[in-house]
Length: 469
Image (cartoon, rainbow, N blue to C red; front, top):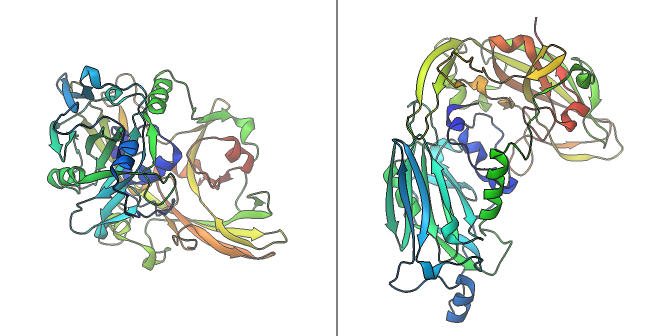
């Protein structure tokens, strides 16, 4: 887990929306730059008055501001953001159109990577901005969010829309983190935009981008560029469930018996029901990247090595999180040696039909045995006497997904095998960076849904034991 994930987590949202932003809150050295590829299509919208009235609802009146987004300070470093409305303007169940987004300004060098996601061309998928939208189906004035650990905030107005800018601490100036957030109301169409801006985007540029966003009503529900938004009622319900401990449970501990389907290096086992098998045929440990194809390594890999090409130690920072009355602060830090884990993985088609665009994914899962339980432990936990609340690994060993693979395919030239004919085997070399402390507890999961938790699928598929003595 990384610092930029810890305090500024994105809200719970549908999978489609999470796909638009989830990888930005990580450094992106994961290399799996996949997801749905979408492009904006800014078509011409009919300008007839009657159609505009039908699409836009009834909450915009020339020269009169009946809705306004504002901030209210809570404690020393807390902020509440809400939308206020004139009493006679409130709507309980507004008619909400589908909308397309138009962006009137982007900084020089910033390009679209996916719908709602933009980053600089020399740092693709490592920062920039990401946007999510909410449909205010219970009324615009029902919008309210609260944030702690706020370094600074301010209200602004642009093109008839009001908004609030929030800045959070950036403890590590050398790292890109999403330490800015901007909210803008579009009450004419009953939407709210939440924009995440990374530290490689200046405050001035972030505000200029937000100020030049337009939402254009459209009768098209599923076309390119149509904004994917979450109903505000759904968001509130998910937050309520989260606060009550309900909803989706993450399982990180199971009885040892449930891991009986664990595999050894050299053992083949089914990867799906269509006849695909997987086998880890070899595992190597190294303290540099000499096993990897240098042409596939980017600047993030180079930053992990010293002048002699050896892996640098990971810096573990122990952080006390901020709240409504305090900012986040680093309590202490330490260095831990890192190692490269390099695996040769064989995928064999034992079926009778050719397999095309075969998705592959390997997660490094640290599993410890304690009192008959198998426990996934991805980070240190504080003792009652500790001042810190979270341990943040700032090295490449923070990532559990493969950070390297040498087979590429599919539409986005990422982790897909283009074709495996009956009886054929495709070999993929995968690599992870781990801390030296984890070498004795390493298991591999080839569950393509990903995630560092026990699931019915991952347990049925089975983990591969690659622990080093």
